[in-house]
Image 1 (cartoon, rainbow, N blue to C red):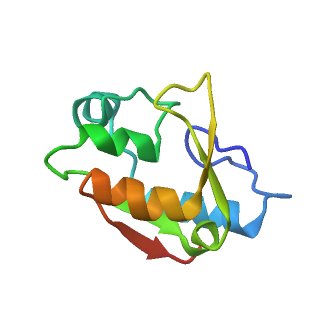
Image 2 (image 1 turned 60 degrees about the horizontal axis):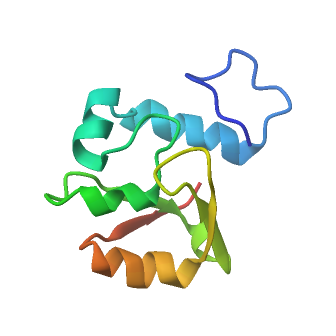
Length: 109
């Protein structure tokens, strides 16, 4: 699934889940670049669950699709978009989040 800056005008051929992601983004919005850098020490395009290690005041709320939680592995950026990580889902949403003092909100898309 490739996301665009803003909802594409033509959603023909798009997966239902991708359209639901745009619906969610429409209602929540995306943080502006300065807030991403302030709270997560991360630049747009590299946003990652790993950035939560920089959110010491817990300003960011993590929403996670239940389908992601059901997978054995999750992929994410290590706070830069030139690399990717493949990590056990249980390690990210258990060990890692506990270590950075964050939780997540499961959502169904």
